[in-house]
Amino acid sequence: MTKMVAVCNCSSGVMHTYMARNALLGGAKKRGIDMVVETQGTLGIEYKLTPQQIAEAEVVIWTTDLKIRDTERFKGKKVLHKHSASSLIKHTDQVLDEALALANGPAPTK
Image (cartoon, rainbow, N blue to C red):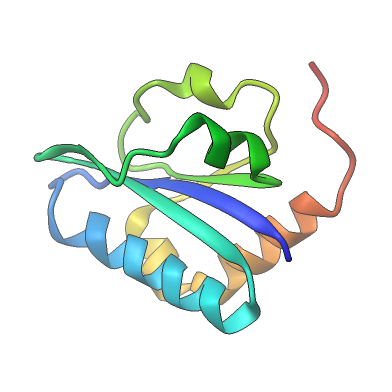
């Protein structure tokens, strides 16, 4: 089973953050992907990823709306960072396809 983690945020910090989280969790479940999603919104960091979850993840997905906090936690991980929360909601399958391709590709360079 592929393991992924994600960090979602959006410029308004409310609705799209959680919609993106739910879209990823639902899409991952349909595909048998083990997914954990942290949100970084106006309420702060919720569902904070643990060091173990990050270490076990084959791929990390970040939304592009705002700067992701504490990115040093993901050093050395394969990161997909090219979709806004809105794009992720509309194109969840495409994002997961890209993440799976990244997971199956070569290891990141240091």
